[in-house]
Image (cartoon, rainbow over all chains, first blue to last red; front, side, top):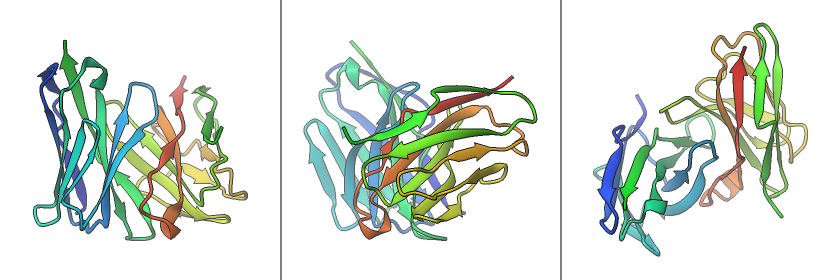
Length: 113
Length: 115
């Protein structure tokens, strides 16, 4: 069956450290993968998109990698801040039954000051 | 400002009632989506539409219905057939399959509670 898996346990890190979140997928062949941030009671907000032929993408303190052989994406936040505390969702495209975007369950990140 | 608007923010439904959640976008996006989010869980796709007057079922369409009569609007009706409708509902839009390498924009969500 098709699955997108993110760490269900919350990630707790100290301010200034690098947070690394994992997204694994099964039985998908995405052309790209996206990462979103969601704050409690709000809709997700887009952060980064990485294509299947890209190994790495950066945006300010954010870095995403995409390994289509391992079927895995890693999302890094360097020099993390308490304001980075949120849930981070990965998403990918699926073309089975029509083009659509499928989301993982998300990983909750807590950054302590 | 361009964006996507959901209303209402909070909605209460009595047992056996149908309720309709509104979703409007002025981004000129072709694709629109409805997701359901339960506490501690990810977004599950209810329905999606790539073009006006066409829509497809997602993974959990039972008990829901949609229409796409206008490009800007994609209302979701939660029918009495949906046995566990209490959840956070999110609407999203994107440029769609004509421009797939772009992100989805989300509304602020509607929290539906059965009373």
